[in-house]
Amino acid sequence: MLLDAGSSVCAHDPAAIERAKLEMPPRENLQYTDDPYAAADNADALLILTDWAEFSRLDLKRLRYTLRYPIIIERSQSFRSPVMQDLGFTYLSVGRPSQHTSVESASTKRWP
Image (cartoon, rainbow, N blue to C red; front, side):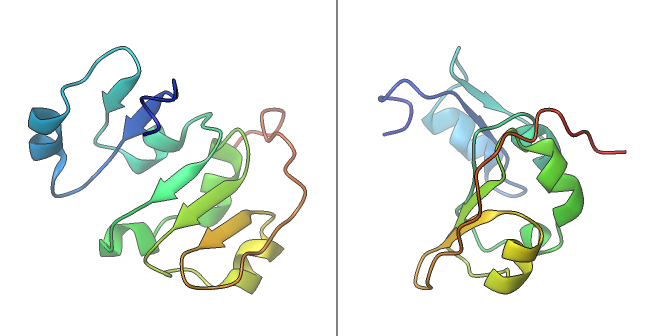
């Protein structure tokens, strides 16, 4: 649906990326990467749609400065809402109340 709406997607999946490429081949607005931080680089939002443990171990401070806007939407409920809010994320977790902060661009802030 995102692609049909004209969005650009950069996807990362530690286990299913090869199958995803077969189902949805890379094209101008769909790319794949082996690095989760590269997938988040300058993105308007990060969607975490799998339960892979790798995602629960992401460096959230680094991720905060990697994203253009600090928005994370996830379904696995890997993160605690108060922590995400303290780090400045707008955090939407399927099945839990959302935590909203001001959505300011992080583009002027860079990871050290």
